Every structure is written in C-alpha cells, then in structure tokens.
Length: 214
Image 1 (cartoon, rainbow, N blue to C red):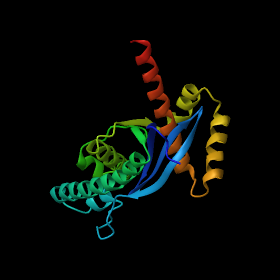
Image 2: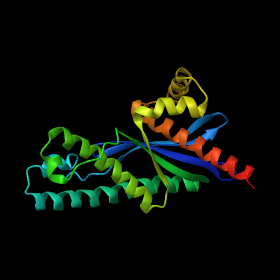
Image 3: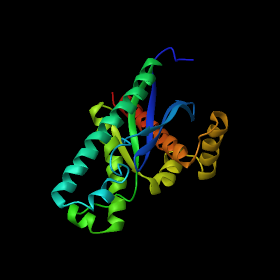
Image 4: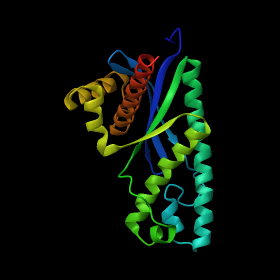
C-alpha cells in the first residue's frame, strides 16, 4: 500500500564488476522496510571484457587504454542512470521521497596514475572496484540524488553506534527482513540495506537538529 504522504527513503548500493546490488528502504519505527531490491547491470555484453575494463586496457597502448576506459565509463554511467532512474521513479510514484544514496566503499586507498595501475595486477583489481563504485556515484549526481559513501569495514561499528543496537540484534533484524522478502537476500542485499538504514538515521538526526535550532 502506498503511503498517504511522502515518506523518506534511502538507497544502498554494493557494487561489483559490471553490476551492483541496489536496495531501497524506508523507516518503520526503529527498524526499516525494504521497498525494492534489484540488480543493476552497467555493462553491454558486446563490449570486450566490459566487466573488467582495466584488465583489457592492460593489453593496449596507453592512449588506446585511456580511450577504452573513457568509453566504458560513459556506457556504464548511462546504464546506471537508466537503472536508478527507474528505481527512483517507482519510489516517487509510491510517494517516497529519496533522501539520498549511499555507496559501500573498499579501503578508500588513493589510486596512482594509469601507467602504474596497469603495471600491477593487484592495483588493476582495486581500480576496477573503484571504477564501478564511481560509476554509480556519477549516476546519482546526474539524477540529482545526494550521494554518500561509507567504508564497508566501518559499517558494523557505525551501525551499532548510530542505531544503538548490538551487532547481533542488527544481524537478526537484517536476517528477518530476508525471511519476509524471500530470496535473493545475500550479503550484498543485507549490507546495502544496512548502509541505507544508516543514511536514514543520519537524515533523521539532521532534521531533529535543524528543528531544535529554529
């Protein structure tokens, strides 16, 4: 059933090579309701190793590698925008205000210049992970959806602090959501939902502080 008035929602994203698990949630008392969960692909099957753009770029001359990566980025952002636009349109049609989107991050390590990336297999994997996370961030910006990032390794500590629940309780709540929803409800969806939940709590605190300052 659609809400009678706009209710705040948030989107969580856990990106992989070529796709992302995307979960939209809304606050329900102290807990959350999952409004939507979907997989958004951001590659075209006809592209050469499109889900591993840096692996392919390693086989090219530097200028060709730059052109290839730019093409992959443009295509991926277009597909991410399309996928997220459908999601936000669905949420808007059901009268949910999208307060923002949060993207799960890895270590956040700064990347070197392209020649150094392509010279290291480990760095290629790091760059590809960041590439697809950045694609979804750019798509959010194009859609004027506020975007935030949170390191995945910090998620549990942030959750226990902000939600004022134990880690065990949070895991239980997330597992119960999966029981009610049915599959798929893997670690991807759980972590994306938790990140979105934290974003909602952050927005709630901001709203409370703003009212207190009036």
